[in-house]
Length: 207
Image (tube, rainbow, N blue to C red):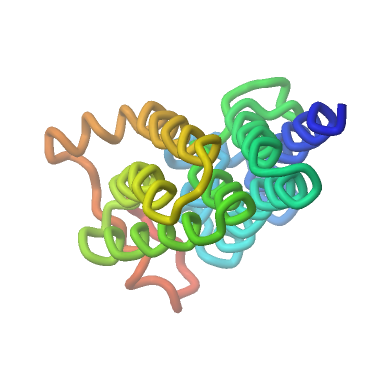
């Protein structure tokens, strides 16, 4: 019963569309009409800069972290995995947006793994940073870091629910980035200029 409650709470927390809400409050605009139309932190950052993008990334990470961490500590890894997965699903199809398209789950998945398996989440973050600052493709960094979660889960000796969760997360992130995969394949994916604009107030213009 407790596991079911935590899964429902995880979905509700994951459904909180912080990217949509913050842009509405501070810019009185709909982020879905900007850039890729995604409500996640990357699109918010590209459209409005770090002052809105960074809080969205942190909040999206936190809404995956909190349910997964509580589930893991209170019940165990299995419940933590289910609660984290529910948060990811909520981010993808938010209850508060009538189940319309949400985000691509990258930050929320990262938060979920920090809650369930901190070593795995931290290693995945390291992979994302390495790939992003080397090649400057956020989409590629997201997919590679998600795929690496399976390896880290196994290497660090986490139980099978965490390994299976890592596999599903990797597949989910790849599927939601399928348009990016096509652009990467054809050499049409734009490189991010985020690292050059970190301290600038103007938003990045890459798509």
